[in-house]
Length: 140
Image (cartoon, rainbow, N blue to C red):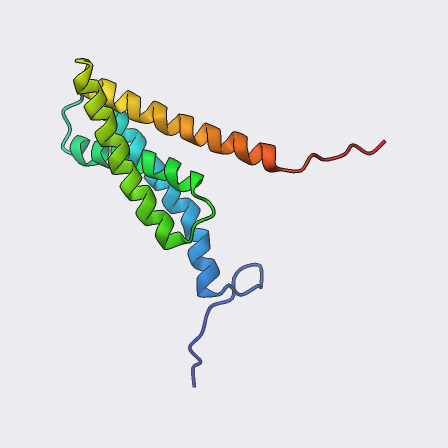
């Protein structure tokens, strides 16, 4: 008779399905960064590729959403996803509206502005987290 169960890992420690899913998150995050980066690069260098549109759209939605999601660290996961997605759409619309109003609209400029604003928000989140970290005392 065969028992259906999980196979032991090479280290001898069995992993639950929840921890297996957590191990997959960094891989998915890396893939998302790669797809977004390729989309931004294809749009910036103006390559005529079939995946340019979807990858660029992914970048325009994922970059601000990731930055806003990092800033909303205290929210529950579902609320954070909804708020960051809505914030990403709002950021894109506000950047496009401001660029059109200032008569400086261009695709490349929009990509750069979204990337710059997303990086600025992520930088501010990182600085805030470093300031909240308690200072370590040096051993004399």
